[in-house]
Image (tube, rainbow, N blue to C red; front, side, top):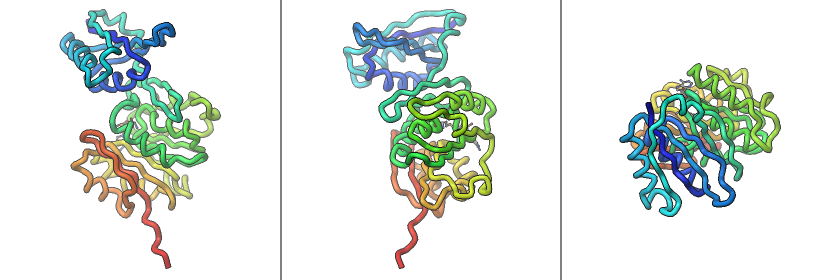
Amino acid sequence: MGWIIRAELTTADTGPASSLLWDLNTTGIAELAPDHGSGAVELIAGFDSEAEAEAAVAALSAPETISPLAVAASVERTDPTAWIDVTRRGSIVVGGRQHAFEVGAAFGHGAHPTTMLALSLLANVIEPGAAMLDFGTGTGVLALAGLASGAGRVVAVDNDPAALTVARDNLAVEPEPAAPTSDRTVVLERLPSQSEQPAGFDVIVANVLLPVHIDQGPSLVDLLGPEGSLVATGALVDQEASLRAAYEPLVPRHHLVDGNWLALQLGHRAPAAS
Ligand SMILES: C[S@@+](CC[C@H](N)C(=O)[O-])C[C@H]1O[C@@H](n2cnc3c(N)ncnc32)[C@H](O)[C@@H]1O
């Protein structure tokens, strides 16, 4: 037996509300198509306990969270078979266009602060035709953002078999308005070697925890092209020194923070002028 909440929101509030609900341990969110008469969107979110569902309603209804007129929420008990129709869907907005995808058993619904930080930094560095590596792809959300931004080739890597399945499914779908992805994308369980990518990647993104940055940082530095940008997130603000050290000799170009989460954009040091 589970619990669901139903909330009516304005379209603009659905992104922040979904992010809040994921932070409050929802087991899944369904977004029902907007009612064009009222402009309202109905979000249905599942919870394992009534207390969690009630806490979510209280959080959504707090004036500082969502604009007060936008929320009318209720808690209902449901049986698990009814919940089966509510798939975990993620979404991101790239270039003003929303891209939805399945989350399944992988990490990366698009609204986690680290994913959002990575998306912000990637928007500055992905040029049309860029070769991109998404290390720790999870659902493939950042690789999808790269494809939707016009990357020419995207290599997505994860060592979790469940994530590989989800990412392969998500990245087989064409992100409008770009070209079909099948020959632009490869999903792998390990990093490619330098001989497989001799020119290096123009963009590398890694949203993983600090120990993984420390372990894999040197290999990622070796795979970064001479003019490339590496976006590293998943570490905490107070881990910045260790994160920078993991990517030496790269130097930081930008620094973003959301709560306790940190993201750095790094690149090779420019050669000294002669
Ligand atoms: C925090 S999730 C990031 C998912 C997605 N890129 C995002 O930004 O929302 C980290 C992902 O890294 C993967 N991962 C962790 N260590 C890894 C490793 N050594 N090699 C490859 N993938 C790894 C995990 O399986 C997980 O899917």
